[in-house]
Length: 415
RNA sequence: GUGGCUGUAGCUCAAUUGGUUAGAGCGCCGGACUGUGGCUCCGGAGGUUGCGGGUUCAAUCCCCGUCAGCCACCCCA
Image 1 (tube, rainbow, N blue to C red):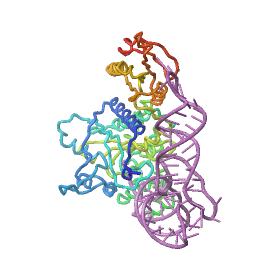
Image 2: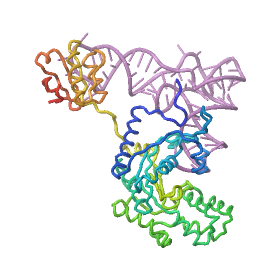
Image 3: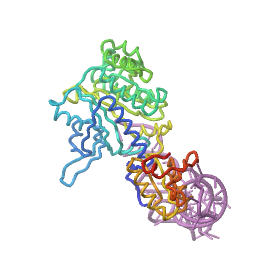
């Protein structure tokens, strides 16, 4: 054992990189379909960027250190502060709404466990400069379409959406004071994961009486249209966003669920999470509106490659090979080498993926390698056929063979 | 950061109450097979039993520490 990658960091062997590339390709393709432009920023930033703009939780887990120039720096734990800076620098010049996406590698110094490493890649899609709930619907639709792009359906993943303004209105309407709201949000956020008696204790410690305590649980239990009705006008934008998704035909993926709160402090409006429907994994993606972070209305979501990758593996939705060989060339003897090399290069010039044995070996051995490489066909060049200007093209899946003129092969045709 | 469980070949796992040279399957390399792959058979390489210490005549096995992984909590990109 010569050592391995640092804890929480990954080596990507070809098989794994194939999956990662597949994920990236799907992300980029859906983002492009939605008219989003790709951007990027530096992976290393000044520590200040996060201590000022992110919540305490993130700051505690920063991958931070002092560089050789005595600067306090951190590997980026999230993309939003970088995005905010980039947008702010050109806010006057950029046509709104801004629709940007990025696939940054993000870092956090925390103990790793399944689906949670010290490093991951995360698709970020953001819309800046648009207050309409149609913008919220747009991002949710994109997240759902990404899932569909991977071949997943509404029985695989579900999107649960809420609105912090709705929760706030319902709670204050039931007599809960502003100062107590933070605890209520924390309790609602955990209401599906933490035993009720523990939650009651949290509320009691925050000074909640019996009536307020049951009010919190009542609100957390509201679903669908009941939640919207209870909130009246405050629920309008949530209702419009959900209606838009239904009009797009994505309604079966979506449900209103007020237990969705999201951890980050800066969310202000609609918030949502995309879950594995079997709930064996944590959230696949999550996002929401953060109007207060910039001077503009803004919203976005993140989708990490780790949990997503595990979900795809579970569902068998992963591609097999990264490159598919069009042909594996075989020289029967040393005299056939020049002709084989000439053919190999001619085919490559035509864009055909070609490999051949790099050392002389028996036909059997070379066919074995061709098969192991997953080549579609083998082209065997031997003295007998070469006399007549031919080569043997063997279909490795069907096991059939045909003799093909070398002229045709040199021009990229196999038959 | 807290607690629990687990570390044997690249992978999945064996190894009598602690007992001598740590095995098997898969995978990898080679051969049977010098013009035809997948099958079969044979052979080979590959281990400081995570690391360090302790107990013992003797430790993969028991004890302590440490590191790593898994799980739960905390928290969430």
